Length: 474
Image 1 (cartoon, helix red, strand yellow):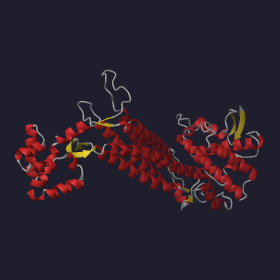
Image 2 (spheres, helix red, strand yellow):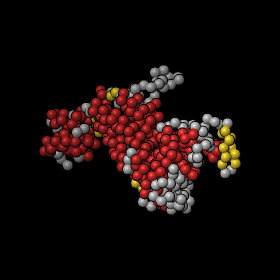
Image 3 (spheres, one colour):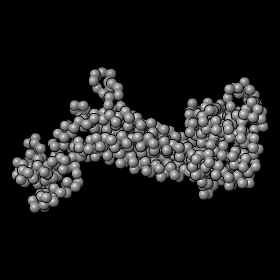
């Protein structure tokens, strides 16, 4: 054990840890659960990147001794690489603000001293004086949250791309499998299975585009704002240097937010960023439910498709296999929507010159992005990729749809179409057979007008109505 001192007195700490007395006090005081900052390495990495850029800027302007700055930067590189896992034991529910910043300062100062002297407690690097120079928790942590959003949106975009590609492959594979479309869970007009999967893929691609646009909003920082946006405590030249150093560390252009006081207070950006995640989750949820519905059966349900079996579905009914992956998709996407409610409550937690001190907004983004990303990859690789079509069953149900009477009503009016539908229902025959019995058109025309391949192609449909325009009576 080693003894450390902070403004509240002495504290004993294990020799193995790099954090200090203030972190240990926060660990003991804030242990609401085991959900600590260590569970969010992307967040820790973002803070380390900021601390490195600050050390670079302070060295450049001559505010920080070069030897100390170099040691701090080396420690930051190690933190960025994940070396100090386990040294952020503070519960995220209150530890996301000053406790997090202080923990990072302590870890980096102790490691910088160790680099300089071999002893964590001697070397002259102080957590607040040197590691936190020209900074405040109130500009470090909000800036880190923004970098986290950028990272998490990128992860989500990549995972969504995997799902979109899987859906596109199925769209191509089943482009000629005609099936029955359904509205309000009732029989409707024909569609191809490929068209259905193509529509799902188009929705995911649209959301990828929106996420990419949203991600561009998170290339800003508020460093130099310090405590409330006025820059009190910043050394000359720091504000001019820090944005360039952040760009260098992160490998992309980082711009200073327009009004630093507003930027410290505003939470609308976080709400909008998560809203994009929620919108994607709702879309994925709908695809999951559709797959779950289309695979219902295998004998008494829709059974349009067969999904890969994952596990036995019943402890009492042998042979039953449940659609567990689509069900998981629905549950995880529900959680993303629940996270959005938590984010909104957390966004309310700001007063006067400080925006939200709550960790709920950034935690919601991290949790939702991770959960949704994992879900989409599993959905694609363990379910969508292995879907098989019941092509013959699909065709048979499409041919028997009463909605095919639409072809008659388009030529002869709604009343005649209704008569054909009623005759088909009462006689237990298809609408095509009913139209033949009614002798509404020559047999070859009826064959054309009820050919399922023509009914799923808008261009062919228009061609048919042009061809048989002389028969039209409306």
